[in-house]
Amino acid sequence: MIIKNNKRTSAQIFCAVLFMLFVSCNNDISFDKAGWNTTDDPLYPPALRERMLDDLLNNHKLIGLKYSQLEKLIGIPDSKDSNFVYYRVVVDYGHNIDPVYTKNLMFQLLKDSLITSFKVKDWRARKD
Image: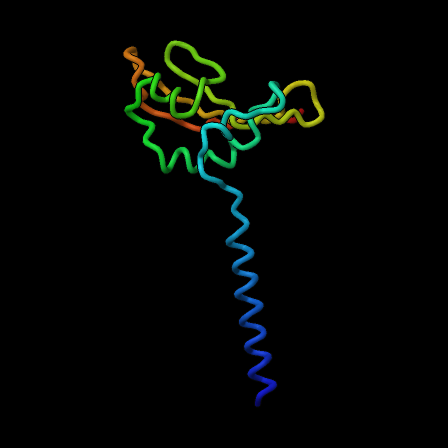
């Protein structure tokens, strides 16, 4: 009887540890302006951006900010036009000179520089 109990307890502990490992595999981290903007290579966006993206989008007020407030919160965008500002999140060149995958965070602006929406846009090169 004691042996059966030990086997059951061992199995329960094993399942609990396995569950904890599965749950802790999330690599997301809290948004930090310095980490969002620190890069070693200008061809690539900062390495931490992808891990910070969910926290930035879910835990920070972005809609309704003025462009100057957005820039103060997360830094200067990688590119800008009259209606949008763009932050590169991921650029993967694979084994090519041209990107094979990109992920960008795009903010839409009104004429008075008010942020009205944002979206994450993924792009993947077609395989020929």
